[in-house]
Amino acid sequence: MHVYPELVHGVAEVEVTPRGLRPHRLPAWVREQFPDGQLLSMESQPSGVRVVFRTTASVVELVTHPTRIAYTGAERPRGRIDVYADGRLAVRDPLDGGDRIEVDLTSGQTTFHPGEAHTTTVSGLPPGRHRIEIWLPHNETVELIELRADAPIEPDDATGPRWVHHGSSWLA
Image (cartoon, rainbow, N blue to C red; front, side, top):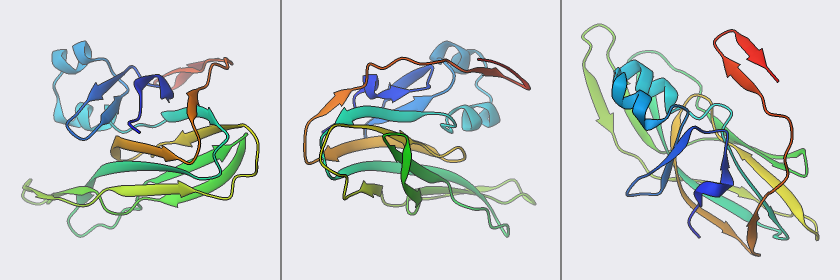
């Protein structure tokens, strides 16, 4: 099944891409008004963005295509996807695969290295209806390609406090 925009929480908007959906933390009008490469790179990294739904499934899989920035000669930890079932951590899944944009800081040259999709799997969920939250990585852009489960998936209609964060200030 495709990932539907109503399942994606914590975003300004969701862009439809040839692969699926790309979450954005800034709306298109801001990205168009300030098309700075550094800004666009950071706003597309889905810190605080999650896929939220309810299901009676015992197995859930999310297929993503990550894209990360790497620096020649410097190793950086990969992002990860955390999956919570009914408020409890069920899976902490470090990303692998995906595209890598390698930047040589001495010359400024960038090299694109394509990669494969990544699948995050949660299995062994006990019988019953569950609220699933799939938290996306804070340091890699991801496209949401497919959401699979062995039972139907429904949007979560629960509401709660909203956290608004800007710079070093926050309001709850």
